Image (cartoon, rainbow, N blue to C red):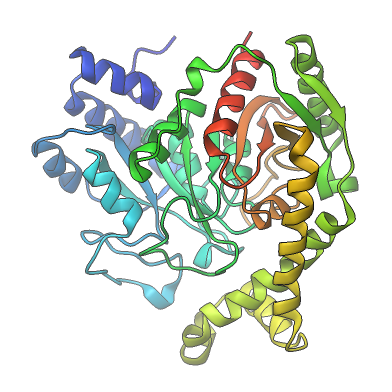
Length: 424
């Protein structure tokens, strides 16, 4: 087992710092050494200034995150580092203020280590980041640098955002935990918002407890300790989800293996299909997402059209051609789907479903399909991806737990239970 502090989970590093057996300076320098060794290949950072991190560490540190380095996706504003949103249109942009997530992290004693690579405006056009497990493969997106950085040991915690599958999918591809809280749990002030109905700030860590630690630190909510999960076993609805024939055989096999392990550990397992209203919400996702992106990027589209990627331009043109009521109708479909989800989930503690269609695709030109995640983002409830195995190419794979809005603490607890079950 590695003794390098850069390989510690956030919760273990925090425990050692609190006990006096690890100095925050040694943790930071270990992370910087790892970055020096691997960043040329992983390319996780949009901006990195070690002097800023060292200066922050020189000030008194207290709070839940005291001395822990944190990566910040470059769609979240930072007052001391550029925020370029993955677009040449915003190159060199320096915000005056921190986003809420960043300010709250500093307030809890965290060290903002750097800005991590995002796809263009957190949409589809990829940045240069590679998968730490195999640089010939994508790390996923849009939170590419944050997921890859945690997996590579650059920082134990990081922020991402999710509109379709931008936290859950890269977490699965990189073999770490990724948590998308309930919609709005982490305030979006200072986020370059693309979709008012969907954009959710999420977190990455090496395990479930790490994700709970960062989310709790910035919200002030008691999200429990997933490492001390209840001894009871959950009622799980096992669902292939809307992925259907896009799921690789190894993904279907992994889901069945995990369901079997859960049943052996005492979970009540029931296989379900989704109600028609929930399926309709999935079908409405592209109209809502792209319709709201069209509005969010009105200035960029008007003044810098040549600096917007062909993929994003195509999606916005598609949205512009929709009938005027399409956006409102899509939002109404979301609301109906959420109502159907509440009725469905009355019988279950969580839904168990794939995190991604398969392993990380080869190449860096595509960050993967969000078909396993977009629906759950629209449902506004908490979701978490947990490492669960490896595929035929030896790359990580994950499974996802989904809960109802407001049930973040409960879902993290069940995720801790599942993590413990899979680790036995």
